[in-house]
Every structure is written in C-alpha cells, then in structure tokens.
Length: 454
Image 1 (cartoon, rainbow, N blue to C red):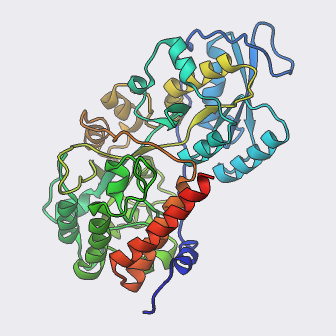
Image 2: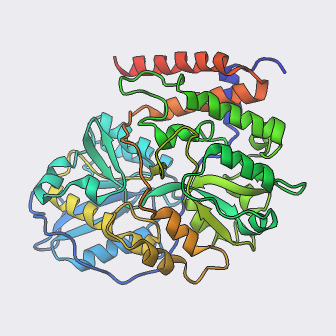
Image 3: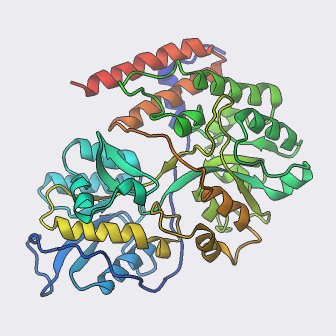
C-alpha cells in the first residue's frame, strides 16, 4: 500500500461515526427544593410572575412532555417559588452541534442567555474562551462549598469552573456474559492491564466473533492518554506528548491485535462499514468493548440493538507500568451560565438543582457525588437484570478507587483529537512506523497550539 498522508487519512475518517447521545427514563416525583440563593439580581426584560425571577434555559433536548430534561425543568419550577425557568429548545433532533450553531447566532445578535447546556466539554470550553460563559467560582464561594468535593468532574479552563455536568459518562469495559462463560473466563478485577486486555481478547476470539472492537474516535488510538494523563495530547506547557511511551505502546497494541492476534476487527473494515460504536458488540460480533458508560442504557434499546445476552462490566485496564488503580475518563455535556445574564443568582440556583436532581428524570449517572451508587443502579435497572448485571455495574461505576488525574483543557481540543485520529489511520492503514507518524502529529499539534496563542 502506498503511503497514506494525514490529509487523506482525514478524508477517510469523515466516513466514521460520531458519538450519539440519548436520554431515557420515566417521570419521577419532584424532590427537594433547591438551595436558597437570592434570585433578585435583575430581570431579563420579559414579563414574569410576581415575586419570581424569570430565566431562559436553552437546550438541544426536545420541547416535549416525555423528554426527561423537560420533566426536570418543570419539576424545578414546581419545587420552589423564587425562579421561573422558560424552556427554550432550539432543535428537535437532539443534535448538539446544530444547537450550538443556532445558539451562537442568537448570542451574536444580542440575545441574553441565562443558562444553556452543551453536548460535550469542548463545545462549552470553546465558548468560555470567547468570554460568553460566566465562571462559577464566586457562586461556589458564596455557597461555601468546594466544587471538587461535590462533583466527579468539573468543566474548567485556567482554574475557572465554567460548567457542571448534570450527568457523567465514565469509561469502563463491557462484556458479553455468554462469550465470557464460553471462554471459561471470569470478570477481570480492578488493576488488570492492557496486556491482560489483549490476552482476554485472544481467548474470547472465535471463528464467529472477534474478542474486542476498537472504534474510529480519537480516544481509541491511545485510551491510556485519556485515563492517565492530565491532557491526552499536551503537557502542562502546551507541548505535544507523543514521546510518552503509552502512545507507541498503544499504537502497536492495536496493530498487533489486528494483524497478529486477529482478535480485533480490521480498522479498514471499521472505516468502510460506518458502524455505530456499539453496533458490533450488541450484534454479538465482539465479546468485549472499552467504551463510555452510555453503553449501559443502550442495552435496553432492543429496537436499535436487538440482543438477548446479559452485559457484564469491569473497570478499564491500566497501563502496564502504572501503580495507580481505578484511573478512568469521565466526560459529559455541561450546564453553563451566560456571561450577560441579568439573573445570575437565579441561574446558578437552577444549575445546581439540575446537577443534583435531573438524574432522577434522565436515569443517567450523575456527576454529583451525593448519591448511593448501589441504590441508584438498582432503581434504574433492577427490572432489567436479564440484560444488565447490576452487581458488576455498581461495583465498576462506584468503586472507591475510581478517579481521574488532575486534568486541564484547551478550547481547541477537538482539533488536537482529530490530529491523532488521522495519525493513527495513517499508521494502521499503511503500516507506517510509529516514529514517522509521531513526527507528523507533533508538527501538526505545534501548529495548532501556535495559532491559538497569537
């Protein structure tokens, strides 16, 4: 095969699937009233009920009674008598990218945004870098709380908190119980390594299915970078980190599993097939999958992913030389406050309530730490144990060892991620050396960083 340049690899990657989010769940009763913040700091200029501050909440979730986020907002309105939230849905297809484009147009036209939600971290932090998002630090101080004690992850830029995750997506490993038992394997324990992962994949592989599956996203060329490094592409002084041994290790692990072990579906086939990230697992064509935890609720979507086996769960593997246990990647969209909101106290009150209560409607794992993990998992999935092993799920998601490194973000993170996606495609499709691809990725990352420092 002729050498595949990074630009051509980028074109190939346009065929791949992007992440899909979804919400499910039933109506729950309204719970405790929100914290007693003073919402009296101004109005948005619109008519409002007597005695109530009125704020607008912009979302990409549908304006329908069956939408869980809509239900949560209505519950907030009913739970207290100080703030009235107006639900503003800009799209009806849950497409956060389209939503952000429309929201940007509104903001550019002078619309005052009180609270909005994003589909991922990069969407929020890119806006924060442009000064359209209000930092929340002073509100936490006024409430006399340490936000790191309250949430598993915060959306921060230069030590300022710009967003709170109403739900968190935690990376884990999901297994097909039937395949696991047929191979005579037990669930791995906390502390297993990526070498162990390779060994499991070999033992799980049969003529009918692969042992595992790797998707096209930028996390999959080196999952270790997302679970054990402060930033997956940069050092603290904004230098590329592709000299870190984990990159060469993981690139070569992927190649070995595909080319030698035959335990992972060929990357070229994955690109050409345009799979959903969960498709091959639920189709029984892959026995285990390192994946974000939205795979859990997807197990109940039998219309989209028909299957009969039970899913079992284990922590992500660690790097072979790591002494840390429980390192994982936690991500999610954010709830944020507009910098020009005239009702900032009321907006903060709403954001805090949603971060602590919305999960009861969305049935998603909250970033808020003040929940009983086992009780929550049982309430969500206790009636679905034929499809979801609740014991291993609770143990995995709420293990006391679970943690993230001290991370930092940059507003151009999506550009850096694409560089790694393209570099890996070039590495695996053309059988190029890691050093050659590393040099190209390094140069491209340096260009992006330099362009954003001007």
